[in-house]
Amino acid sequence: MKLDILVFGAHPDDAELGAGATIAKEIANGKKVGIVDLTRGELGTRGTAETRDKEAATAAKILGVSVRENLAFKDGFFVNDRKHQLEVIKMIRKYKPEIVLCNAIDDRHIDHGKGSKLVSDACFLSGLLKIETELDGEPQEKWRPKHVYHYIQWKNIEPDFVVDVTGFIDIKVKSVLAYETQFYDTNSTAPQTPITSQNFLESITYRAQDLGRLIGTDYAEGFTVERYVAVNTLDDLI
Image (cartoon, rainbow, N blue to C red; front, top):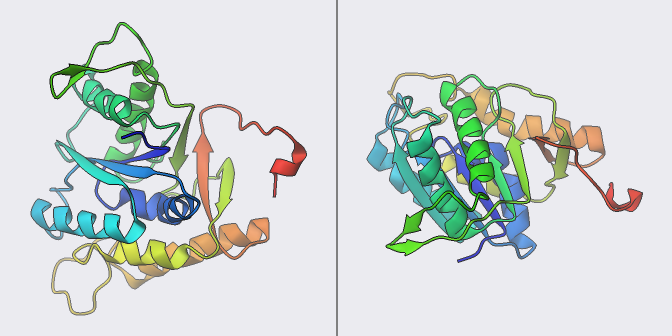
């Protein structure tokens, strides 16, 4: 299956929190989008790998993605080496996306920066003919995505461009709340974490509102780039 956009996240819920509204908008516009989670989030204070698996599947249905896979790397301990790069390359060559979205380049959680660099490096290496990979016993063709963009997570990194996601913020919030074990719940007796506060839950909306305010829309999501953003004409800008 060829996808238009492949979204990578170090943990289940990264894709939803960082780019959930953009994913929903692109799907509504007819694009085929998939998600690949690098880990199962097994080191999370709340929930288990098994509950995260179920929550991720529910979130994927809410967003309407074509496919979701999990590479089951070790949460907190995966590294950017040949072994892990090859597994990511297999996913890139399997789905042949034009665009890859991945973790923030610098963030509070150490896996986010690691995941960002790992995926970015794999996108380049995936285009090299002499790197050979197989999937289900069949050799894969080289493939390099045209664009790699990084979504914004915990830190307020200044975006290089923003996407107007007006009309899709509710789907994003619903997909995030599919992770029932991870976020604000007045009935939960589990330990508190930086993402379980009511403030964090509300930040999903008010951060998008603030970015939207800056571009004259209701809501927006921000991304950073690895090279200049190019437009054909000034009319491409909104």
